[in-house]
Image (tube, rainbow, N blue to C red; front, side, top):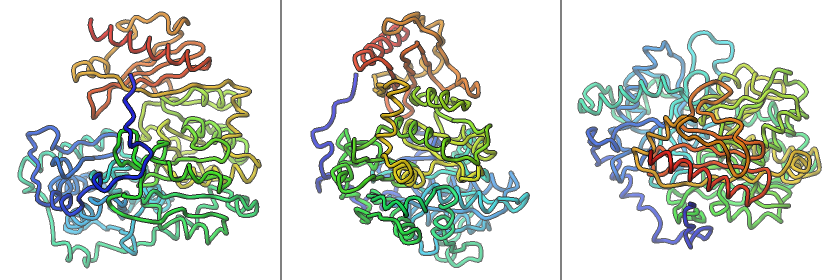
Length: 549
């Protein structure tokens, strides 16, 4: 049921595994995608268009087409303020930025790029959009982040954040996707473009200090004084990502007892320990990718890392090592709602439908409303904007929360503040987040949670998307009667593209993968590890039976 762990997992990357960067960049410019091939078309998933130049899934043609489609979308939507543009440290980010700037400048878009032509985390772009738009009814800003998140070094990514600062919703991305593919099919004839050197010197491309305003504002969302005054020792690993140039200014401004364990940036990511499948992947929730910081756990009171665009967090504690993302979300929620007295009574807890039910129990203990949404951070944007979500998070280690005064901070995931929150929790409670989580479970029960993959054909994945509780016909799960079977998220009534089955002491959810011939089974038990295994077996058996009908 579970994928086999590669023998190299958790060990340093070998030279033979490293991406040939010159060849990759050459493929970006030389490769010509065929829009008749589905894998070579523009395709916006939950986090924008992603792919590798090696298989003609992320090439100059894609970025030119997407950039022009985005300019057309801005005009049609009346968005005429600055566009904040950031890149991460993947090799394809800078070539894609050059391509995008050629189009943006030709279209007269006011573009803000990093003052030193450096790297900019996703949450910093969201913060810049929101602070610029605060109080404005015209000249509103939006943004682009050129990143494939934690994906391997050969990948590139391009995502759009509209004026609300969060990930663009499906209506926007599907429109941009259709327009970009039409441009590809028409040989890019509708793309306006000027040479890169002219674009850089044009009056519409501006250098912008991203670091200063974001760093200065952190005290509005995190109790930086408490961290400094406590002397809590902190280990920080940027994993060679976009946050790498942010941590030293944070440490110096706020006087933190923090150590950056590595500030190395290399597009091959040769300094990484490889992930479970033997690939280099900057996944800060993976114990294999996080082996370096885990090995240093005894050196610090708390440690944390971010993925390549810093929208995810990985928390390492001296008491238990790398925390399960669900466990940290639960501990963070319990802490924040106790220590943020200015948050309104109406501020609720947002979680995705596949996140741990320990969060449900924490919300109930706090007397806070729980809002359960489909997978994707876009579902939290409105609630973070208006303060109706105090905290919103995903099981994949992405979250954000309000400023200390109850106002919006970011509407995209912010791995930087989630790391600093771990330090604040340790400073103010004299216990690390793992210890705080253990106290929660002594009262609320111990969750046993796991996500596994099971094989599925394209036809079976399509069937799973429309599988109804009646067709699944499951009345009992792991010896307990089924209390509910859902195909829509209870928080907003939106379909989540799968099915979730709930009992008194456990649940599972099944969703098809968007990129592989598998479906994902998320499962949890509040009884035991063996009960979790039975839930997983029963889930796969029931779904396989439905596939055969």
